[in-house]
Length: 109
Length: 109
Length: 109
Length: 109
Picture (cartoon, each protein chain N blue to C red):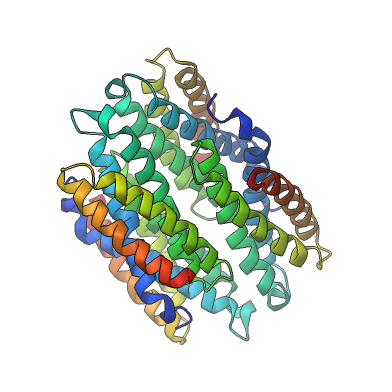
């Protein structure tokens, strides 16, 4: 298949997009939303960048590598913020972001 | 052009998507984020549904009408919530949602 | 987690989005692209609808059910077209669409 | 408004996304689809990258500039391919891509 070489990174991005969306939606329902505002901002950007990175790899696009480079930046920033919060959704998101950043950095190399 | 018949609705959806994104991002930077949590949730869904409705009309998709029907629901719900808040970004969003709902309802009829 | 009740459908939609993107990209590289034109059109719509359905379920959106209903229609139409073509990417897509339609129909019920 | 500084670039990206979608859909309905296959591939990537660039600027995201840089690359590549074809949808797309590339390059500078 045309994109089998990207398989691990596509899966990591696809998973990270869902976990970031879950984290944003969960943060919005926390009692202290104010404390989570930056986390929500980063979750949203990270989710959208991961989704598009997965899509461009799936298409074997010439811009897939570039997209993975910026996606890795988003994952690093989002994972760092999520890592500061003790809620399960934030901890799960920090972990998904870390894995996705690693895969994207390999791709972009 | 294949989608000129949808022109007004494509523009309304495209505009509403941007205005909803702006409203969500602005709500996240308000002092009282908690009060805006539901607004942010609805903004996000409405923005994404408007964007896809615009895309499907642009493609002259057989599912464009169905998509406009659900998009109109999102716009009505989001516009009602935004209308409750006095900030400029919420009032602008309420207005964009109202216009977009009307165009989408015409399309879906 | 707020969306664990949708887990199976989120996975089916997320997978179907990727398989549809793969199919569209592969169809575009076939010798006889003309024969695949309708397949590509349906793949694109189905991929985008599946992706948004997965996102709305992930957010536990009030419009998730409605979105799954229209997503099921897209999957049925796309799966039927893909089923006509013998290439591996089309057969894989027909299967992913069938599974996703079933999950979405359960959700929308 | 938080994103008024990006206004011209948001509008250029938002417009380019729609024009690229229109071009891809129109190319898929041409008699000689084979000749348009590369144009369709580039249209799809460019449309999705423009849409996300517009969204990230709308959110005043820290990654908006980076996204505009990659978006400009997509626009240059897509506009060059579209410029080779005489159909109205391709010529309109070449023009929208050129304008969007210029705005994105200013943003990324």
